[in-house]
Amino acid sequence: MTMRSVFPFVSIKAKLLIIFLSGILIPLLTMTLNSYHTSQSLLERKYSDLLLDIASQSTIRIGEFLREMETLTLVASYGMNSYVSASSHEDYPIQDYLRDDGDLNESIVYRMLMNYILMKDRVFSVYLYNLNGGKDIYISAHHPINYNYSAVHETWFQQFLQSDQKVALMSTGPDPQVRTENHLAILQARKIFDIHNGKLIGVMVVSIDVSFMNIVHDLLQEGLRSRFAVVDEHQRIIYHADTSLIGRPFADTVLPVDKGDPVLTGERGIVRSQDVDYIVAKSAFYNFPWTTYFYMPLHEVSAEGAIMKQNLIILALLMLLFSVLLFWYSSSFITRPIKRLMHNMTFVEMGQFDAFTTIRSRDEIGLLSHRFHQMSAELKQLVERIQQEEGEKAAAEIRALQSQINPHFLYNTLGSIKWIASMQRAHKIVDMTEALISLLRYATRHEGFMVSVREELGNIHNYMTIQNVRYYNRMTIVTDIDEGLLDYQVPKLILQPLVENAIFHGLAESEDEGIIAIRMGQVGDVIEIKICDNGIGMEADTLAALEESLSDRRGSDHGIGVQNVHRRIQLHFGSNYGVAITSKPGEGTTCTITIPGGEHWRGKMPC
Image (cartoon, rainbow, N blue to C red; front, side, top):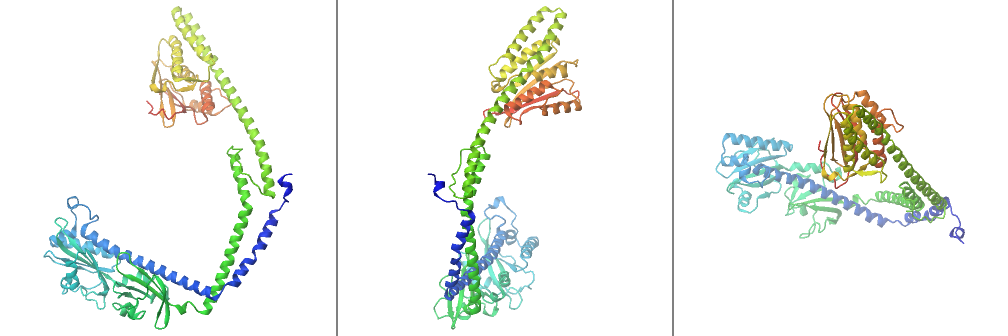
């Protein structure tokens, strides 16, 4: 008893019905068990994640801008590459100015720094303090300079000079170097050392308008703009929408907590301040001792109507998700055997009739797979029979085409012998007869279809012996072949028909000395054999007719010998190989044979 008779046939439609009926109660049960407390916790988690993500993105944007300012001062002070030695780069305008504060150097520095300011939309000013006894430079695009003030005598400036820091960043405060009232700025200072002797020769201070943080502030939702703050390492406010809070402690003004307690120990959480719960998220800067805070009253996100709405959305999403999962599972369950059947079909297309995956589906697909296996077995037998017949047919065609060569040159040779006899040169007949015997022996032997290049060249020399008797030694053959290619195997009798054409159609009618050159070498992945002559060449229409005959398998009156060689090469190696002909009237003809090359034949064509 077979398995097919034990298990009943179950249709795909019945399977789908069973799966969906058994699964419809699960989403309804999930919707019923959903509760208020679950929604509340999910909502709080969602908003805390949102605030943390916004805090992180804001920190990244502000940090990138400050690092750009730091890079700008580095580039301005030491050039594009601060690691290049002084002897290899001498164009440092600020270095030159700090050593010589002449008008020319001052003009160059002023233009360079102003360009930097304009590139950043004029959100900062640059002050260059000369510690080498020269003049200071103050540059601002939209703030009037207070030339009566110098930061050199400020406490923070002297502490920075005495410290080991090369770059210092000060918290937000008034910028006394400009005359604009209530102008708040963040100062970034960099020491400038002489690149020749390492001496401290100046300090560059970048005064960044605190308004640059609006790049983050303006991207926030309206409700979050007033709940965004940046504090320094002492928890003093650097930036806030309410500028009156800048410089004051964050824990005493924005979110008052018990004295001595931190506002938030982790990255996010719930903080109670003045009997109000807040969702708070913070993100620390990577290269600066600053922190970004976002906070939101909890009651704004936990209103009853919003929670119910959120519950309905969650339930709808759960139903949708479950439906997608159910359909996905159903489709996978149904289509898996179909995919296996398609995989088997792919193997059959590739000619692999035995690499099948077993399909044990008890439905219509199982029956289809069983019938496909039967069809594949029959198709395999048919393909093997066709391949055998094609091989036999190709071998027969090669033998038939090759047999056409023998009488083709034999008649010409006999005509030459008759002509020489009429000239009563009997000793010439001996040479011609010996050459003819060699030609016939080479053409009629049956060792195989392939011979070496060396044997082909020997046959050509015998043939030229006969032709030179006829043409009074007016024909010369020249060979230029890599020694390593002489033993390369090629189809028999592919050179003689092309040399014969060169003589009878190119050189016979010319009164000049006839030269036939045979060159062979590898070009890329193919081997090229060129047979060149200095004969009369061919007209364009004659060449076109010859090329058309090469592409026509049915034969033609043009170039029988050439077509024979071309067809035999294609039967041996494929349609990508064969004979190509180039010719111009009065410039001779070149026949190029292309056959596949091997990895051990690497070189250039000699011509």
